[in-house]
Structure formats: C-alpha cells, structure tokens
Length: 586
Image: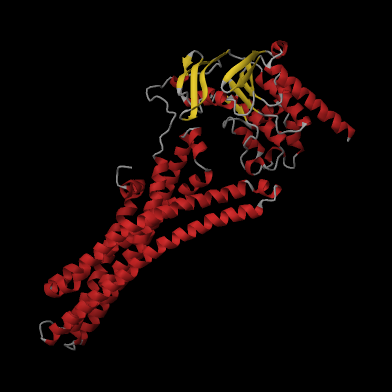
C-alpha cells in the first residue's frame, strides 16, 4: 500500500467520474454562494437599509431569494451525485473483493476467519464509501466557503481579516496533532469490530453445537468480553475525537471575539461602516461553522482510514497459486498423477510430507488410510493443486501441473466431502452447479445414475425443493447423493471422496457405496476413508503415517502382509461386529 490510501480508494470511483465531477462543481457553487452571503448582507445594510432606498430593497430581496432557491436546488443535485458515488464505489470494491476471494488459495481461508473477512467487505466497505462521498462534500464545501470568505475579508479590510484569522495556525496545528493520536485508536476499534463479526458468524454457524452441549452461558460470556473490549476501545477513541470538537469551538469563539472587539473599535473610530462591521461579524461566526463540520467529519475520516487499510490489505493479499501468463494452452486432463520427491509444510519448519513419491495410473482408484493428521488430506489437496509443494514436483499426464491452467485442472476434478456444501437453492440448481449449461433432462439423468432420483421425487416439490442454507433441510446421506450427482454432471477425470460415508447411517452408506462404485469406474480416484470396509475394492490402498507410505497394495495383498493394515482392518472389523450384536440384543 505504497500509494496514498485515499487515492487508492478513490480509484474505485473511476466509473463514476461524471458524478464525482458534478458533485464537486455543485459543491463549489454552493460554497461560493454561502461564502458570499455575509458580505451581501453587509452591502445591503450600507447601501439599502441606511440609505432608506425601498425600491432597491425590493430588488435585493428578489436577488437574495434567487440566491437561496438556487442554493437549495444545488444541494439537492450534489446529494444525488454523492449517493451515486457512494453506492458505486461500494459496488466496485465488493465486486473486486469477491473476485479476490475466488482467486485466493485455501491457505488464506485457513488463516483468516469468515467473520473477519465478511466484516471487511460489508461494514468496512460501507464505512469507507459513505465517509469518502459525504466527507468529500463536507471538506470541499468547507474549503470553498472558507476560501471565499477569506478572499472577501481581505478585499474589504486586510487588517480585520488578519485579526479574525489569527487563531487558524493553532486550529490546524491542533488538528494535525489529533490526527496522529486518533488514527491508532480507530485502527484498534476496526480490528475488534472484525473479531465481533467473526463471533456473530460462529454463533450462528455453531448454534446447533452450542445448544446440544448446553454451552449458551459460555458463548454469552465470551461474546460479552469481546463486546466489552470493543466498547472500551470505542469509548477511548470517542473521548479523543470528542476533545477536538470543543477545541474547535474555543478557537472559533476566540476568532469571533477578536473580530467583534477590533471591528467595534473600527466602527467607533469611523474606520469602517456598520455594514462592513456586520459582514465581519457574520463571517467570523459562519467562518468556523465549516470547521465544525470538518472536525465532525475528521473523526469519521480516521475511522474510515482504518477500515480502508483493512480492505486494501485484503485486496493486496498475494495469490499463492498463479497461472503463468504465457500459458494459453488448453490441457485436457486424462488422470495420470505422479508425486516426485514432494515436500510440503503448512507452517515453516513443520513438514507434513518429506520426499514423498507416488505414481497413479490413469483410471486407478487409490485409497488413503491412516490416523488423523497423517497427511492423507494433504496428499489429495496437493494433487488437486489447492496447495503447491514447497519442494519437489507433481506431474499430471507427465507434465508439471504448474504448466497446466488451474481452470483446466479444477474443471476435471470431482470432489465429495464428508459434509458436502449445498447452496440455499433448489435441488435442481444445486446439481446444475456441476455444469452450468446442463439441461433439466441431463440433471435428472445424473441423479438417476447414482440412485438419487427416487428420494428427490419423494420430496414435497421434487427437484424444485429448496435445500436450505448449507443443505440443512436434507439429511447427510441425501446431501452426499446430490453432491455425487453434481460430480456425475461435471464428468471429471479425477475424483476425490473424502470420508464420504463417515457421517451417514448404514442404509445411506449402502446407497452411497453403490453410487460410488459406478461413479469411480474408469476414473482416477482418491478415497480417504475411516471405515476400511469402504475401500476393500480399491486398486491400491496406501497406509499413511506422518507423511510417509508405510504399506501399499490391494486389500488382499495388505491382509496377507499381516502388518499395520491387517491390524487396523481386523480391529475395526471386530468393533463393527460387536456393535451389530449389541444393536440386535436391544
């Protein structure tokens, strides 16, 4: 963020330049009119009131009415343009922010909570755009009014002008000092605001867990502490911001008092007229009103600056996985995958994989088994290029996959998670997400292929039934089948099943396993499974421990080895049989 933060934020208004220019021109007109009114009033006193010229009074009244009317119309139009700039900037920033989120690798989401990210693109953007649009009005209007009044004061009496404006160095010096202090306070407030938003997000997403475990009191207590911290930081920032406003008031009162005293002496000594004296008094009283407005906006600007820094930090986040700009070649993925001496770590110094090598032939199904944290998901995530190796090379179809565009690779992937994500839309549209140009007939055919059609038709509205947020209106097994139908529609070359049956009942597992067998036929596939009974038909089974392959082979080969896999399988087999017997006795 080397460039000035305000210039960078204003760059998002480039599509609304006409509105921006129109707003500034209208503000200039309003400022000149309002800055001239005190001197117009003084001229009326000297040339109309004191002379008793009633005919001139009528003409001046009409002119004054035209001034006021034109000022009202001008204010309406610059408010219109300011609204366009505010909403337009918010649209541009949020659009770019969402685009950035789509391009960032999974490591960003591992390190940043959804709540904090959401805060940056909602409340922070609203704060910044509103403050820029309306703060620009206040500052531009204030500057034009003050400059107009200053010029007219010096034209009428430079001596009185210098006396009236004597407090300005103290005023601006104090403002600079307050800016230095208050920006740090508002940065702290915006930071804790992101934490609060994250807490709200966790409270909503984790509501079922909290209620199930009866931890409402703990959640309320933790949230209360976060809210209290934000309140205390906001109060400190508010106190410092509040000091500046009365400081401006004191300086304004001193300036007005100086004008009153000096002007009074000048009138008494017949140096200036009553009209000129009135002009200076009106001016000194109104001159500091823009300063009041600017001081009010000043605190908001510091608040917005802190928010803007958070927004730009998100937009400036470097994408860890980037396609080569020179690579325009379209690659159709066949499914041959090879790891060559791959090392990887999420955190520097803590290697998950070290010199890992593995070759998977096209169409081969590979099951990964092992304890939690052994590196199974890491291997799959690297193969899918959600992360890249810190050392070594991964080849797809004999080609370094860094030379293959992410779009080509990811469009060839099918991924079914333990808890698949469904959008708050109809089942039809959720399946269509696998291929957006799919027809309804193709979607229904995909659902029939994995035995999802019957349960869908039993729902109240069939394929038009809403899945609910995150698919919460459907069972886990139903969500799995829909995500599989989505994958069938995409027709991927490489398929990943990540604990796909670990959270479903026995009946659903049978349906999902049958669908899986059809789905994996002829495709390169990774199967991460806790239940070893689901991987016995895999072409190869890899037993992973601490990022290394302990054993590999088919189910029968590994059982014959009488090693680690044999122990895992037999223990799990007896546990499942024991559970079945206990269930039958009940």
